[in-house]
Amino acid sequence: VALTLNNAKVSLSTVTDEDMYPSYSFIEDETGALALSRMFASTVQPNIVKDNSYTGTIYGSFAFDTFGRPVFSETAKTAASEITPTPCEIVPAEVTVGTINTEAGFADYYGKLVTLKNVTWGKKEDAWGGSDYYLVATHTEGEGEEAVEVSDSIYFHDQYYQFPANIP
Image 1: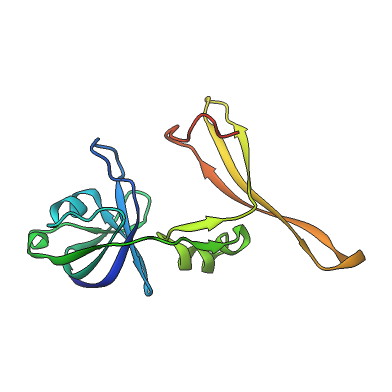
Image 2 (image 1 turned 180 degrees about the horizontal axis):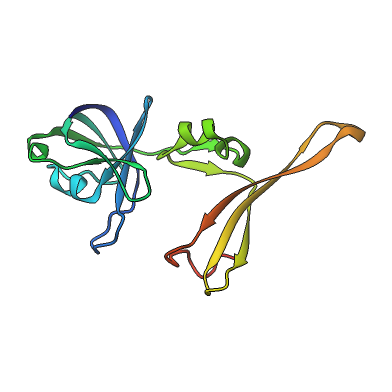
């Protein structure tokens, strides 16, 4: 598959020098966002790295990782990709927990860098020594005597025990 990039910014990269699985670089433009596999991001010349935007054509294939997420992966033609990097600043989109916690919100913001304002962490220990985390946002709906506090939350399961120990 040939994919044309037009100022596609690398919004997030979990790719490190260590062989961590899964490792992705996420690129985004005005049309959406896409995860690039670790091997793809390091096979293309120049390598696709954070804090750059890219213009050109990349070659690869679409696949799904073990969690069902779409990923652009390398093929024999990946080395023929021609891209030009430009340093850039990434500005995260400001969204609410309530927006991103819907099917449409997930689809709109998947793979994009976002900022969630006015949230707190919640934590629940599981029986095996791991923890489940929640981002909780509370807001008021309505006015005066009709006002009601509403809480929205996003659940994070720390299956691989990778969250920092200082999260409450």
